[in-house]
Image (cartoon, rainbow, N blue to C red):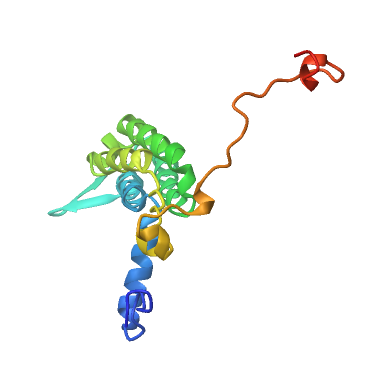
Length: 181
């Protein structure tokens, strides 16, 4: 068996390995970690304004006037994370909007969910804005024919020789037909 006839991926891999590879390929084509951190940032921002925390026998209600604002910010952060996954070309908008919403959550939602939503939101927004799709790899020497792999030039790689200079002339011009020489 040569490398030209070898299978890229063997058929006898388990379903787990096949699904893991499929997920890895999907994850590499989008800003996965930025979107995940944006969704994680939305959860504490949503939770703390509506939470009733109990310490000992004492209940703390964190309800503030920013409850509706925290609800909107938290849901938008989750939606921006999902949109970065499903539409990778919207990554720049989603990243900048995630950063801005995380900063707005400082005064609106209990210091950005006590920092537990602020920090992942800022990092996730930065990761989304900085992500760029991978460039397609150049064809390898194995994809070329035997003459090209040996270093010989092919006939299709050469450009036809054309006139060195092209000028526009009027019809009937004596210089264009060569009569004026």
